[in-house]
Amino acid sequence: MRWVVLTILVATVACGARAQVGGAATALELLVRPDWAAGAEWDDGRAEVATYRAERPVDGEALAHTQHLVTQVEDFNKQYWTRADWPHGQKPLMAVLAHHQIATVPTATTPLQTMTSIFFERRDVGRAVKLLVGTMEWRGMTFKEFEFWREPPVFRYSSFRDGEGTGVVPLAGFDNNAFVEEELHLLVRTLRFGDGAEAWLRVTTPQATSRATVPEAVPARLVVERETESVTVPAGTWAAEALWRVTLETRDGRVLRWRVAVEPPQALIEFTASDGRRLELESLERRAWWQPGG
Image (cartoon, rainbow, N blue to C red; front, side):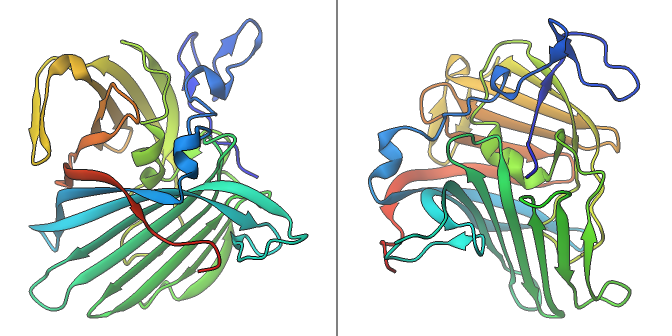
């Protein structure tokens, strides 16, 4: 299983080695709260549904749409690494935090539909065990699966595009400090926030696309800061002191920025990316999503 680790910059990192604290590799819990999803509020049988006014560039044009981020607790059957149906019986279970990113983008032809599903181990949300991406557009469908529970992790894909096709590739270089970019929408909410905290990591390009090239994680630097200006989104206005700003700069030139509420559940208020992507919170609620046995 891959362990997702953000390594706090507390010493010089050389030759690809992790930063050291007291002679040992920096622990995940120093930046990510592993028990972030352990609270009873996640056991009410409902999902957290965050709705965003969104923009995404498609063929050079910024297209407005609505995106939903849906987060809930469920049980995985480790025999199949899927949601466990009732009755559970003797099934080998793992409690996971399921996080879905769902969008339908109107285009000049037919809508572009994407769904990304990420499953983090509930007892330690720094561990992603599985990630799925499905994309449908007028030219065809693309499906990707990251099997992080394997060692090394495996990337499966099926693309309608010439030169890509269908395949299975081991991600031998996808180590403890590598991320799929879409994971960060949740993980930035789980940080042990502190003004000026920095981290080094490696991150892929966005995977919610119809391309299925083998992902490469590039070096990046993450910085946590107190926000200095108020932020207004459709859901309301947040004062500067009510927000954290998390900025990621990658070696390939991307700049990603999240604004996260200080108060629990550390809602994602706004996200912007240098390629034109944007999320602005419209509403946040807990809603019945699926029921046991459904």
